[in-house]
View (tube, rainbow, N blue to C red):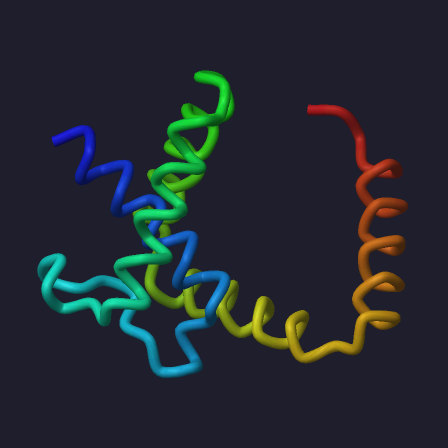
Length: 110
């Protein structure tokens, strides 16, 4: 069960990085639903996940659970924003990241 949960988390991160708008399904019913390249990437992500310190593994799992519990509309909004970000030029991405870091610094501590 734990392996499939972590594998699902890795697959989710893989598909988020690839972008669902590119035609990839967010969730497949089983391992055979994925192409060989998608399986390879998921396995690579899983192995990278296994090498992380335990605290970082748990953080990935917490983020995955938070993602799973989001409303579909909210997930779609995040995916659209991510696709917009990916379509920016490298200099525009750098500018966005600088602005974001500045904004985060200005936010009150939680």
